[in-house]
Image (tube, rainbow, N blue to C red; front, side):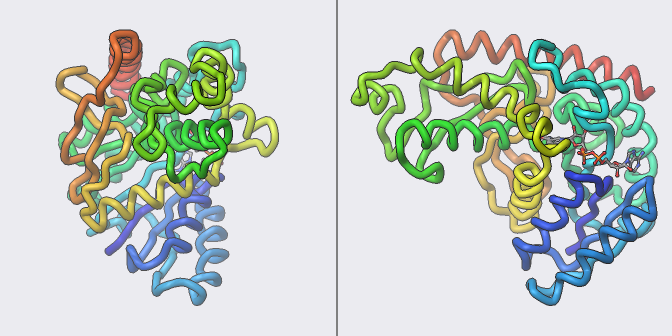
Length: 315
Ligand SMILES: NC(=O)c1ccc[n+]([C@@H]2O[C@H](COP(=O)([O-])OP(=O)(O)OC[C@H]3O[C@@H](n4cnc5c(N)ncnc54)[C@H](O)[C@@H]3O)[C@@H](O)[C@H]2O)c1
């Protein structure tokens, strides 16, 4: 199985490292970057680590080398730091990168669809949900999804686990909607070992309202906190991207909050999605309170508008 990674800056390199380290899921990885010297350098660096992993060939290439790729991961584009999207007070957040990155996608997509018409396409570039909508519009098929709110849901689990003094793996909690400032935290269905988080907090003499603002703020702006330290958020999303490639290649039917086009919402957003061969196979609305449903409708409206803009910008 062949996997392509387009864009090997901070996120693409971390994705490549996780793909190789996770091991065994693909036989070949081709990396492409507008900066061909960078693609050559990253591929060479990783190639020398492959004897430590299950057999995988890593090489740089051009679009023609994506022929027969099963999955192509797109991380190319401007990041939050370079694109001036690092102000916590700016409610547009990652949507500020839409204009620049819709243009990057207008460059990439015609070449990609010609080279790999049958591949599943995974969008990582920010803002991922409207760019996935743009990609779906451009390539004319539904094998397109974005990493969506899986990274935010993992962050939610880590934050809850810390406050409840349990391991994050045992927390079930979802963030849905936009991977961005309008994302919706589903506190009502957050559970630990079958027990609602609300009840566990109450046993500690706390309510959700005591922790909600801190938890949501930490997660909504986790990218900015990371960027303030390192310049780019990369390792978490690299691990997420490799895990999602694995779920597709193995037709796992894994239930994960990733984003695909939802006809009822008329846009690409994260719900409870089933990921396997061909990309997202099913999407379900998780159980929500009336307030959570309203917040999700609001997030969907923002994404519909952004997707329309992305399609117009890339035309
Ligand atoms: N979905 C998520 O959760 C998530 C998380 C972190 C970062 N991101 C986003 O991922 C993207 C990449 O971030 P980064 O930190 O790796 O940026 P980066 O600047 O380190 O790397 C971007 C790479 O894209 C390449 N590139 C740009 N235009 C190209 C084109 N037309 N064709 C081929 N390659 C091209 C550049 O040469 C560069 O190597 C950004 O949009 C960032 O905001 C998304």
